[in-house]
Image (tube, rainbow, N blue to C red):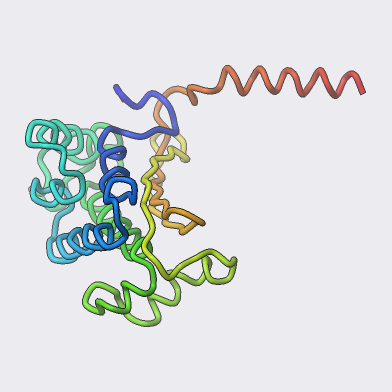
Length: 215
């Protein structure tokens, strides 16, 4: 697993994604709306998620960095031989999960995260990117029911959580809108290793046990 020895982490690409789709980097809500719209048009108008022009839209890090990212994605996340043949198995990380499934789920998750981040106001102003009225209602239903702002644009953060046993075929994406940002979560099988904060967790558990004994 190389650079991902734990079950909860971010890759450099994820940090770049977070930066590009943040109000802190965009400076203004209008610019963040524009970035989300540009990425949505690319993702909705292509059959791929990883071609260089799409990656440049999602995290413009410069040609050398993009090339390194693609070497990591096309090899580790999906097969180095994708898209030929069409039924090619997965990459080095999850050979048991088909490459096309990984590509399609990442593409769908990014589209829905970008829509959710745009907020209902910007979505309604650009019907070509927004999906159906029913899909929009469903996308913002949880936020609406819990009093979470859902009208205006928000930043996006991406996380990778390894939630299934090694060798499992689980691969899912999910999105949620919070008070200040939208989270795009990718759930995959676990690599070897544990969370890097496990020593601190274990120490706190030891302290909890001692506290219980003293009562």
